Picture 1 (cartoon, rainbow, N blue to C red):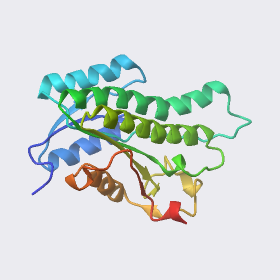
Picture 2 (picture 1 turned 180 degrees about the vertical axis):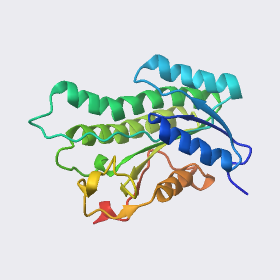
Picture 3 (picture 1 turned 30 degrees about the vertical axis):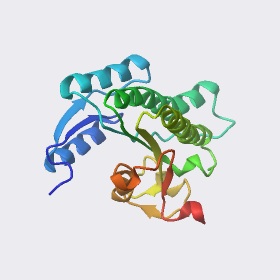
Picture 4 (picture 1 turned 135 degrees about the vertical axis):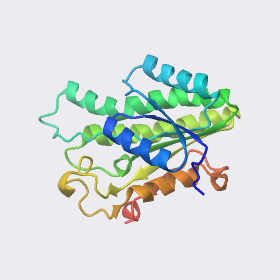
Length: 219
């Protein structure tokens, strides 16, 4: 029996085609799916998204923030506007999601937030200053949030999955240009890492950074 059967899944995607694909898989596995429009990088959009979920379904128990955007450009040709656009597409969006996700989870009496970002949070690559800064920002922001929630005894867990070079993902790893020696992992591998962090087996783990990278960071 599918783990999603009779569950309510709310999807808000930066890329509509990706959102549609995830929605189709969840429906196939028996979930009730609610699609939200693409979210912009502002507080109103994120606040409205979580309020919409709570109004429709009563509560939010689990949030997976898996947005990402590839931004490649050398230091010399990247201006401040381009750098901030790259940072905002990952770092600011993740922070806004985290801000309103934690508030909703608290209202539900507790829950889990899992960020999915790239191993560039831990290891640098050339021509990726904005991506590296944003990924590191997602990781450290999640750790800070985990400490805040633990201190407040809110029963809210916040952790991060660091995804390696993902199979079939030329947008994020074009032509193997980024981290070409990194082992390739599948989307299912990354999903399994997320799934572990939301199970009872990880109930006493928060502020975790879980690499799903075929051992790349250990090498």
